[in-house]
Length: 574
Image (spheres, helix red, strand yellow):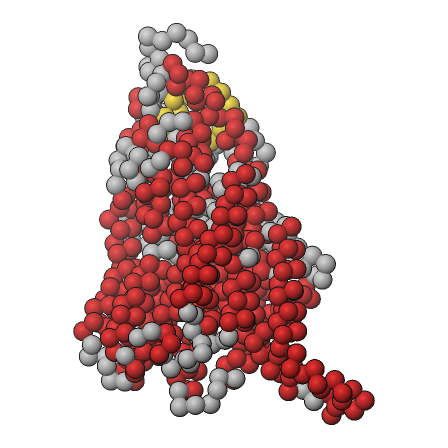
């Protein structure tokens, strides 16, 4: 069944020409952002982006290759999608490998957002929603990196798109509904393996699908139960993976690399609370809403006022569109379908809980502790805000055109003849404000600024340590290096050696054996104060000599050791 034949309405629904136009425009925007990021060497600003590329690379480039290299905390799908691109060493080193899947996800998200909007609002309002979303400088920057947000936002949008269309096809076209149901299940599984938010979305969305099936007495469908089993199997598979590889089915939640462990490791013992919003849902909610608005609305000159106004407009616009669904035989069905858009607001309760109780702090420069941390999380609310802007733009002309000026100001009754111009003027004003907002945001994108702060913390070691390692490797070619590659993954790439030349934390048993006798297993040892390698060297110092030390502000000191037994037969190096 084509979208035009759905009961949503014949004048609504994106045409093929519109869809291709959206893809073309979003591709152009993506390419401009990629060029901008490439010229500023910004693709690797985020340490997490570097780590995602590193994990994907070591699945094949490792002493112990295999899917055990996926690690324990981050979910695996983003790394699996990166595998084909990180095989090119140059793409891995420069970060270009991360651009391809992220940019494709951004383009697909734009197409999905417009398609969903056209089911409920006319072309101009849907274009406004798309522009607010697609021209967001923070999102445009993130889609040039290996970060997971663009992929997850894309998955969330398409989950809602297909549920809305499935809800309408359920009574009209069973075959189309069956195809859409399979697509929904596949995207839910993808979301489950992308971010932990996806687990909550999958639970709510599939429960809603099941309830709709039950209300129509169709729960005897074998396909539905097979798809349900596949969705349930996804988190069980992740539990099993953690149990088999790391010996703890909740290793991702309570292991040494979990969010809780990192928070305790990086927070001063005397700090209280551990971070803003800790065990305070109200404060956590304020922080998440604030960062969401700062990611989407430029507010350097209006302070909090502009962001609050936008939030009110978005909420009122969404409610007005729901109320304005035309009364017809399919009105109830349309309202039920429209209610699925509320899934896009799920980041609000999820991150409120995560900040309060899940060891996921959000820091803003305007509020204590006046820093930048996890500001990109606010972009997950961008689709909901974009839809709200489109809904408000669609509702505002109707409200304004119904106002009777003569009723309140009789002297201005002659202005009523301009009422037909109200919709065009209102849309022109909305687009002008949107353009101004995008320009203002681009001057200081919050997410990009945080990424530069992230890079500054690592830049000193990324520049200083690789030349030293290359000097020793010139004398000891293809010799193993013992180091924790998760701390500073760029060091390996910038040194110019393959990951399999290192013995790192991803090698499990080889790693443990090397820690027990560093001088025997590695020619070069790179230790950072307090890490496992540093503790191993202090426990087993025999046969090691210090050849270089590095110190950087707010970073653990680094020490390079050389194994004397590996140096036998070589001229002195120090």
